Image (cartoon, rainbow, N blue to C red; front, side):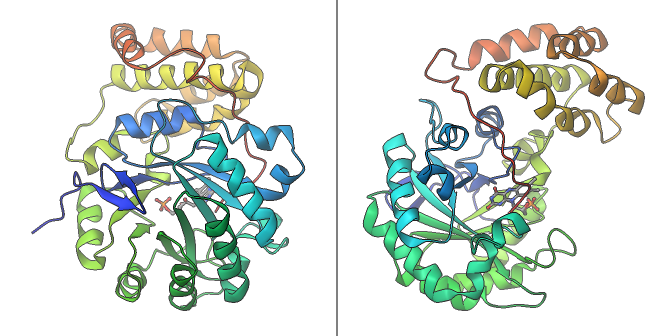
Length: 351
Ligand SMILES: Cc1cc2nc3c(=O)[nH]c(=O)nc-3n(C[C@H](O)[C@H](O)[C@H](O)COP(=O)(O)O)c2cc1C
């Protein structure tokens, strides 16, 4: 019997309406991305990782990540750090901001993060990792989830030691991306480890890594007995993969593609302002228009344009039929001050 992706599940007391989770991605997971993911079927969305040190120092840019819009629930805000007390304080701010879940990053392999004792380094220090979870569980009422890699070095199985310790310390769910930090994004995610982790803990486990189709999502859910699958890179510039995973198989027409991209551009500009959105969006043009969907020179032309208004004009000229679709999409999304909050772009590069 295939697992029903439309069945709900719980992280602590928070009900997640589907078994599809949109991955936290630094430099990607802005509100526009999260809102789009939800529209295409994600039951839970997550902020990118937020620095606890930045929160402690009241860094304005960092605090911007803690803004939660009215239409974002359920939403997890992800923290990274290495000091249990500072992280407890930061978690209190996440709670005050209105998030539904505090997620902890124990997986980021990027040196800027690991050299501070945060991210994947914690997989090598189960005592500290457990102390961090206990400190946060004591600080907030919200459920606390943790996202892990398999370990620091290739072949590591440390997640199987650390994971149960975190649950003992009070974690309400675990997400496993079963690559080592050393691997970064090479090789493949070994979900046999996810199955082993599921066996070891009595909280929901989310499987992250290389899930890019309904067939793969179903196979991973079935073989690991994880509670949900998480999709990251596959959804970059391709929300339709989320729809396909949820059972709505459908290749977007050129008009749908352009309408979705223009909506994304508009929402991102509202969120980040023209100047920041303009550089933030460049990678998305390649992601949306690649996969043979548009000729390469067209993508290159968009990246060279100075303003997002120009980008929009060029896109709509290439697919005039997108205008009606765009109007329909815009009429369906909530607007107004409570949903268009500024969110800074991360200076970090991965997890
Ligand atoms: C650009 C990028 C940024 C990421 N940032 C984060 C992050 O902030 N926090 C985190 O826990 N994982 C982060 N990740 C890891 C993803 O959440 C996910 O676990 C990983 O990409 C594997 O899933 P996928 O194969 O579906 O992409 C990031 C991945 C990418 C590609």
